[in-house]
Image (cartoon, rainbow, N blue to C red):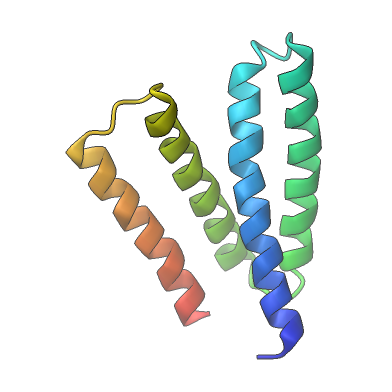
Amino acid sequence: MIIGGYVDWLILIVSGMLEAVWATALGASNGLRRKLPTAIFVIAVVVSMAGLSWAMITIPTGTAYAVWVGIGASLTVLWGFVSGQERPTIARSLLLIVLVGSVFGLKVVS
């Protein structure tokens, strides 16, 4: 794999992290009525989608999208646990581990 391939994966990972940012900001925006969370949402969603698009130049669409969603969903759930908005149960924690393992597995087999 050339250096560019690593950069594409890094961009995809950061874009997935930004998905968690925009999802959290969207939830905090009160239906896009609060200015700061709405601004964070708009900026993060644009940058996140641009990064996903960039990564899809070299990473297959299905793999890139699954990794992007998996990272964003995992971090959003973790933020819910940390912030106290969601209760971390054993079942949720195990399912989160399976999700993260699946994302990691997609990277390994790509």
